[in-house]
Length: 293
Image 1: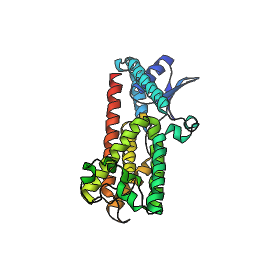
Image 2 (image 1 turned 90 degrees about the vertical axis):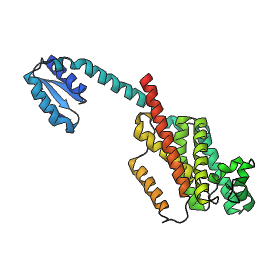
Image 3 (image 1 turned 135 degrees about the horizontal axis):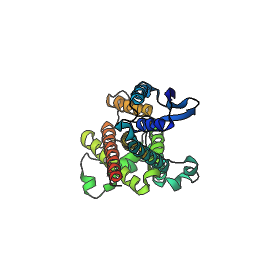
Image 4 (image 1 turned 180 degrees about the vertical axis):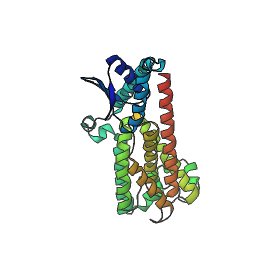
């Protein structure tokens, strides 16, 4: 915060404060012996504010200064509404963790349990029959799904090959799934997860065949959703740090370049695209509702 000058008359000082607020400059007035000191919070706005103060002192009764009160009131009202919305959308951790995870995010927990169970059965115990029952297809055709085995559209996402594979995916699933389910509700979260999983698995099957496993397509979908929501609709309270987003996108690119071996890259791509679409539509819908309100 920087001091930009002093105005002798308190009414004129308030008029200039209104003008600054109306133009997006946050400021404060302090009474002093020789008048009212004007302070500007943002250092980047100090040069412009000093210039505006000089112009104001030359013509304090100009219409643009007299009319600033109404504009400033509008700005302050909008800022108050944003703060209220942010408080409403803030997740209080003390409340969030006062209930067991199964109560606040049952879908997130159930998926983890399903992945662990299937990992024991298919990877550790080598239950090949179960693997064949859960793969997208066993003969590279759509025949199993056409015959009514619709679970195959999603179940490849619940199987993993190796400790690093399942640990990596479930850690990300826990971080992203817990907060999204807590904020969006279990039903909406379930529908989102199923849609992302089915689209990402189908894309992988069409372009690379049926032999793929893992939750990473869904994880990239959840990442895309939170990432876009944070960019387009930050007041909703969902978001991800720039460093984390960069790390995920770099990992996405590394996987496509084949540096880490055989990866279900089409599933990653389909999941990420679906997450971005869901996040964009959600942000757009909230904007429509706010305008109606």
